[in-house]
Amino acid sequence: MNNPALHKQQEIADLIERFTGRDGAHATSIGSLVLFRATQPSQPVHSVYEPALCLVAQGSKEVLLGDEAYVYDQSRYLLVSVDLPLVSQVVEASPETPYLSLRLALDPTDIGELLAEARLSEARPQPTQRGLTVSQLEPLLLDAILRLLHLLETPFDQKVMVPLVTREILYRLLIGEQGGRLRQMAMANSQAQRIVKAIEWLKQNFTQPLRIENMARIVNMSPSALHHHFKAVTAMSPLQYQKQLRLQEARRLMLGEAVDAATASYQVGYESPSQFSREYSRLFGAPPLRDIARLRQSAASA
Image (cartoon, rainbow, N blue to C red; front, side, top):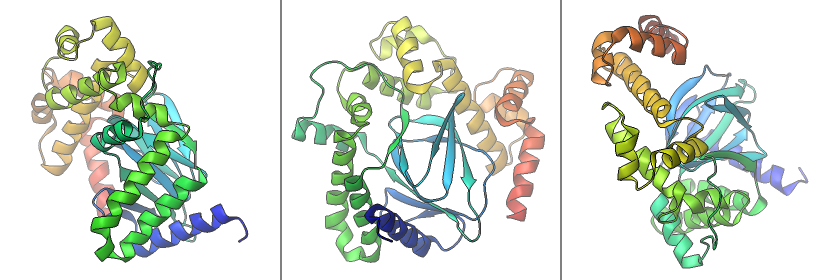
C-alpha cells in the first residue's frame, strides 16, 4: 500500500475493528469518542446530532437534514456544528468489509477558547451557513485523528495527551475548508451564535407552545431575522425543529418507557392525539403503534 493516506485510513479501520469487534455503537475510554461498526446496511435512524466530527474508515453513510442528503466515506468527513435532528443510514457494509466509523464530540467552549488564543476570529461578518457539511479529509487532520485513536492503546497517556490531540484536531478544522462554520458558531453576538442559543432554548422548552416573538426576544433578534437565520443553519423553521424534537421524544417514551401513544403525545406538548399520529406517521413512515412494534421486533431479532 504505497499511498500514505490509504495506509493511515487502513490503520484507523484496524483500530476501530480492534476496539469494537461486534456491531453497534461503542463508548471508549476517551469520553468524547464513540466508535461504530456494522456488517450490513442499516434502516434509517432518527436522532439529534450534537456538534461533532464524524469520520468513516470503511464503508459509507448517508445523513438526511430535511430534504438534503449528505453522503460521506473514507475520503470525506461529516462536520456538525449545531444540534440537528437528522436521519442517518449506513449504506455500504458487509460481513467481509464492515462499516467502521468514529464520532468525536466537539465542545463549543473549547472552540471559542482556541479562536481567541490563535486569533482565528473572522474580521468581517460571514453569511450564516448550514450547521452540517461534508468536506474532503485533509492529511494533517487524518494524522491527528489516527494519533487520538492510538491513545486508546495507552490509557495512562490519555489524561495529558487527549486534550492536546483534541485541540490539534479542532485547530485543523478551524483553519481548514469548513473552519468558518465552527468560527461563526463560537463567535459572541454573531447571528449564527444567536441561533445556537435559540436551539438550546428550543431543546429545553420543546413541550411548550412556540411563540416566535418570545424566542426572538430571548436571543435578541427580530422574528423575521430569527426565522431566516434559523432556516439557513438548520434547513427548517423553528416550528419544524420543535416538531422533530417532540416526535423523537415521544418515540423514545413509547419504546423505552412503554408509554401509550396518547400519553406520549400529551407529554411532549400535543393537544390532539390525532394530529400527533398524523405527524408521527409523516416523519417515521408508520403510525405510532405499528412503528413501535416494528422497532421492538427488529431489536428482538438483532
